[in-house]
Image 1 (cartoon, rainbow, N blue to C red):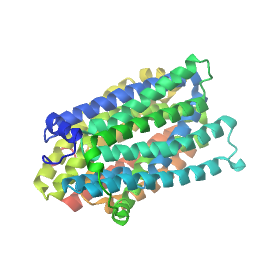
Image 2 (cartoon, helix red, strand yellow):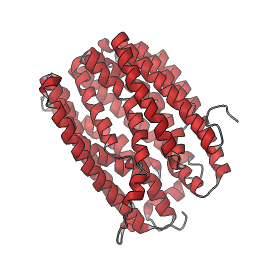
Image 3 (cartoon, one colour):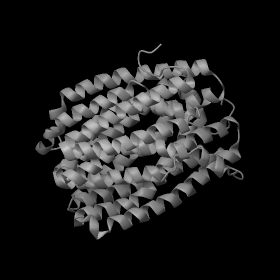
Image 4 (cartoon, rainbow, N blue to C red):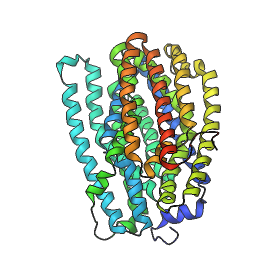
Length: 441
């Protein structure tokens, strides 16, 4: 890539980061940590402003947005990284422009259709939703196309350039704008309830999308000149399996919140959502490793450099596991204190937080296995395995929530993560010939 004339983004990568990607990982981690702190602060504020029930309504609406927005991307938020990185490697600028335009238009059309379907379902009298629940979900429907477009932009930016810059808009700018908008509502004396919080998120997504595409056009300008070339069958053919993969990962972090809200009520849903967001804090090291891994793994695999690929994966596994384990132990020890920041009613979710942390530690022990399988052309096998795990997640969560309430949701989610991680590690061993697990030779 040293001779690719892609402007300042490529030069920034060459000058700032070495082959191992350590600097990129550190900056990606910093972006994620900074964004998570702002997100955490905003969640603390709205939980205290709104109370447990309204916080549960907001969290339910937001997980619907994230799940629908992810599925509406047709897997292209991940596949654009692979296809655009390959096209850049070949100096195929027409292909780069084609995938950029096609991914935006295709995802926008599907997300609009998804928005209409969900809005129609929410309006059904049979669901017996309260006024606040229905209003929050309908406003959330407006967020779905913007959420999908921001994720597509992240995938395109990740194909060439430092991962931290690709993740900066969605993981740093969006929560900052969300908190600023909520603060403005509060300063104006407007009621801070679930619908108001979703309106604030809509404003944040719109501004984030505008800034993100301005940055992409600036840095990828030379690659977007000239006529585009479209290969929709190849792009969609390489993306369908990623729909299942992305759908699984969003489902396993969403279905528990949705079912707890539906079965146990908004109060239980709000407490469970707070525990799940705190548990997610320990996965930031894993996120930073995954952020820099996709393009590197794709290039090594495309070049046939299997030994280097194996060594890099094993390095990523070590980087993922030990910091995650330490963070999980600290979080479990301070669970009551951390949940108490949301309000006294949230402390009862401490056992849920501890159980959820177990699954994340197991997941970190395998490193960026999902990205490894996606970037090496094993997405079909991965999709089949994770489809089974998605079915397991729905069945386990439903049965266990009916029997044990939110505790059943935490146990079901953790079991599903452990089963899925085991399946991915086995697939790497079977298809690529090595064990992607901590401690394996």
